[in-house]
Amino acid sequence: MSWWGKIAGGAFGFMLGGPLGAALGAVLGHQVDKGFSGTARLSFKDQERVQVAFFTATFSVMGRIAKADGRVSESEIALAKQVMAQMHLNEEQRRAAIGLFNRGKSESFSLDEVLDQLRNVSHRNRNLLRVFLEIQIQAALADGVVDDAEYRMLLNIAERLGFDQAQIRRLLDMLQAGRAGQSGGEGPSLEEAYRTLGVSQDAGFDEVKKAYRRLMNQHHPDKLVAKGLPEEMIEVATEKTQTIRAAYEQIKEARRNTIH
Image 1 (cartoon, helix red, strand yellow):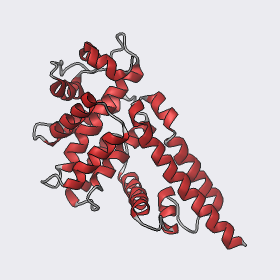
Image 2 (cartoon, rainbow, N blue to C red; image 1 turned 90 degrees about the horizontal axis):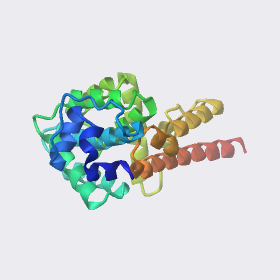
Image 3 (cartoon, helix red, strand yellow; image 1 turned 90 degrees about the vertical axis):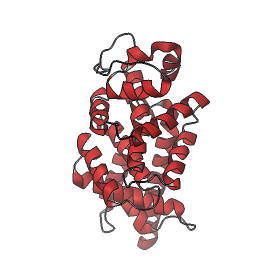
Image 4 (tube, rainbow, N blue to C red; image 1 turned 45 degrees about the vertical axis):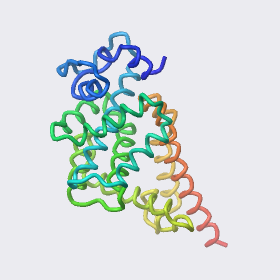
């Protein structure tokens, strides 16, 4: 039985507590002890607990970011629906995701507490938290611009999860490049390919290859699922690896042509 199956089967209250449990419990109609940390092992796999936390935090924090500039745009709603579509959520899961998104928009939503619990439940796994952060950056980029309020919120999210300001700027630059490449009719430019890998155009090829391998390792779908990424999000991770691979191949081809 999957993590969602156990929730639907009534085991939710024993799987996750704290602010994340309260958020998901509210949209599912369950009462959960907010004081319970959600880290006790009980009879559930640790991986399942992380999956529940990741799912809950993803959509509620996405709602919070959408509300950061004072209004929720159609682009931001469309991005949330796009993530839901990628996950192939069933109707019950989709209703929960929408409920979490709306809960994140409310004034009573405790962003810092949610982030702290996610970090603790996920055992501070850098790769898993990086994927979470990337999803939230993409949410902020949904309307094409990250305004000051959204950027401040992203900085706060990054810091609560253990990333510094330089890292959030680097991720933002890389994701903007990937977004530009996907939206362009002729495909990404060579400059955007370098930005996707986070290296300069005058970097040696060994440095380019090292960056490529590091990013592929960080976003390896099977490794992420093993650490607690919900299986439903494997397509999100796979799409990211495809973007990274395409950027690397573009740079490799361009350098090969330069040599010849």
